[in-house]
Image (cartoon, rainbow, N blue to C red; front, side, top):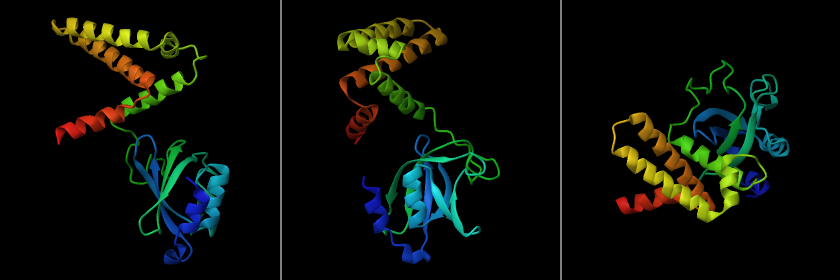
Length: 205
């Protein structure tokens, strides 16, 4: 994405030189705050990789976190269909609201339990790309696809065995082990969990 070209497409005239920017956590998908930007603040955002706004009350550029240290680390931005507002995705450092709350709507900035699978998938992918790291996941990738597939089979069998009894802790432990090794296998094959979900969605229609 060429963000310089995107900035040049924004219609700032509708907001007297400013455009509203919705700030969203890239991990949890929570909306964190709404601020206003101009061309100069967006250029500074791209330069420093921290979201910079134009403060209407201060009458100047204002990088979120310049006083508190709670920066909004820039990930991406996109322009809406009318080309007069932005969605900026970030990795926040600490609470976003000046009141100390996670968001300006007093919401907790946490995703659902299911969202953790996507975070785990990212960690697994990182281990695959850094095999020098001393971790169990990296060691699996080093052993190759056959070993990874074998581990999935072993964990599936262990889950089936535990399913015959009524020990919830043991059953859930094996279920978690199977899920983890399944994600490793998907990564080893170059696929994503989202692709599996998309296929299930198509089958459900």
